[in-house]
Length: 132
Image 1 (cartoon, rainbow, N blue to C red):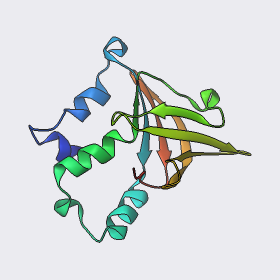
Image 2: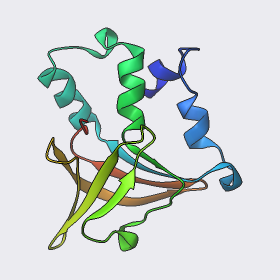
Image 3: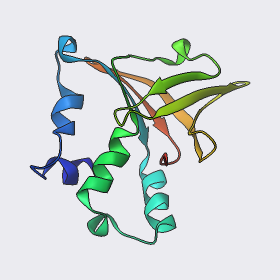
């Protein structure tokens, strides 16, 4: 999905943005759906990756990125809200030993792998695609 968006000159260069090795250019927290989550999202929407328009993919990807913050698992507090690249908020939830991301009642995703650190941010793997 990210490669399809990045190939479109009308869309922001999300690959370049998220892989920039210079933290001075910005840090990010990414909630990345695993392959199964993305496949389930395509199935639920009765579509294929080839059929999803690039603008929809770009918006969906941006909804999983928090700019300006390197939010590691230890930084997550129950009810923490954060604005995504789309400008909309997501809420981080702690339920016992489980961590999840909620989208104001629309849906949620469990964080299944945490703290994959890179030079310009951190990534957490989630089990569902977030919907606005």
